[in-house]
Image 1 (spheres, rainbow, N blue to C red):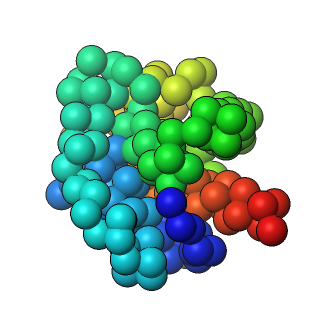
Image 2 (cartoon, rainbow, N blue to C red):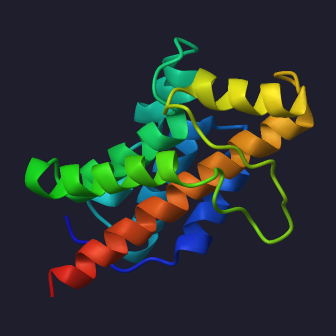
Length: 170
């Protein structure tokens, strides 16, 4: 599909603001695909974000992969039309980034989330690490800000990776 360079912080802020009305996976996916729909048009205009609604809380609270990461991977795969030779290297970079940096690595300028090292990419692993460090509950505002910022980070990094890929293809 046609891709144009996007501004990572602009897309990430959309994802951040969609959460928690939309959950993490759908927020990231929608922010990327909707921005491409605005700049490119079809086929992005016809792709509904609700296809990622299942991804919330690690796939309907089954403690699967973090929804924000899942939504970012789905957006990358969509843009690159599921071509494994293109998608897998970007997804690998995204997952390595999440496991190698303190997370969330990025956040809007006026937000200061708690940052933690991640033991794995499961929703529960991420949230448990925050709860253990901060003695925060699931309904605690620190947990909400953490998840919103993970959503921001996933969108930001996915756009960075797509932009780098676009430049490498020229």
